[in-house]
Image (tube, rainbow, N blue to C red; front, top):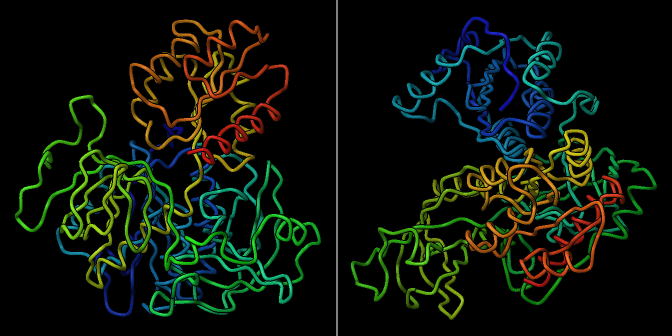
Length: 497
C-alpha cells in the first residue's frame, strides 16, 4: 500500500469540466491501478509531462489516490483533437494507465467514476503553472521515490534490453533511427526522451517521431509502430543500440506475423459462440479437477492469442475469450480457433472497429509492462538493497519479510510475477518451505525461483534443486550481483520454455 496522504478537500473537477465537459472543453481520465513503488514514479513522470502532451490549452489537472492504490488524473483541455487523444492514449498506456475521454463514456460510467473520486479524500488540483510543484508534493506524500529524472518536460519512452518488447525493436544505424512496434503512437513530429536500460545502466537521448506505420499499412514482418529519429545521441547510447538491437526480423516466424506476440499468463474462460457442444469443455469452470486453469493465455497480440489447454476447441470453432490480465485489464474478445494441437489452441480475434481500438490500448500496456519480481528476506536492509538492485534492472518489485508474508503475496500476484528471489533462513517459514509450497502444493512450475543463502553446502543445494529451485546463490555476492545473477537465471528459464 502507498503511504497515506494527509486528507484534503475531495477532488474538485477541473474548471469547466465537471465530469462532463462543457462547450469548448474536453476532459480525460488517466487511471492507474496498483499505483505504488516504481509505478508511482512512472505515473509522476507522466503527470509532469502533461503540459507538453496537451499543450497551451491545458486548463487544470486533478490528482486523486484511493485507499486501494488507484491513481486517477483528471486532465482538462480547452480543445479535443486527434493529436491530443493519440498522445494521451500512447503515453498513458506506456505508464500502464487507462486513458478515458469522458465525453465518450456513458452517463452511468461517468457517475461511477465520480463516485470513486468522491470516496477518496486524498487529492490535489493544480493549474499548469503550479502543476510541477503540486505533483511532486502529491507523489512524495504518496510514497514515490525521490529524484525523478529531469526530462525538460519531455515524455520518457523507456525500453529495457531483453524486456518484453525488445525483440520487436529494430535499429537502423545508417539514418540513426529506431523502430518500435506498437499498436498506438504519438503524432509525427513529437519529441521525447528515449531511455534504454541494461543491467542497471540507463542511457538517454532526445528523439523525434519521424514516421508511423498504421495497422492498415502493416504486413507480415512489418508490424504497426513508430520510427524514432535520434537527435545527437550520446556515443554510449549508440553503442548500446548497435550491440543489443537487431536490424531485421529475428526469425522466420516473426517474418510471417503482422503483429508481435507478448507473453502473458492469465487464466481464461472460453465460451463457444456457435451453440455447438465441445466434448470435455465446461465454460463455467476456470479450473480443472487438478486445480490448474483449464485455459491459460500464454501470449497475446493485436491479431490473436495462444491458450494452453488439454481441451482445445476444434479448428474453425467460434469462441469468446475472457480473462483478467496481469495489467489489470479485462480482456473479452470474440475469436476463431485457427490452430488446435496437443499444447493448446491459437485463436484469431474477430473484432469491430471500437473493439480493435480498445484492444490496441490493452496490447500497448502489455508490451510496456515491466517484469515483476518478489523479494523475500527477513533482513529489512538486505530486502531494500535487493529491491533497488532489481529496479535498476528494469523490474517492478514487491517485497515480503518472510515466507508466510511471501506466500500471501504469491497467492494474490502469482500469475503476474516473473521472478521469486528468497532468502533460505527466515523465521515462521523459511525459503525451502516456501519453495516446496509453490512448486508442489501450488503446482507452479514456470515462476523462476532463486534461493539465497549465506553458505552454499552441496547437499543443501542439491536438495533445493530437486525441490524445484532454478538456482542457489551465495548472499556474499552482494545485492547488485545477486540481482544480475537472478535475472540471468530468469532469462535462461524463458529461453528453455
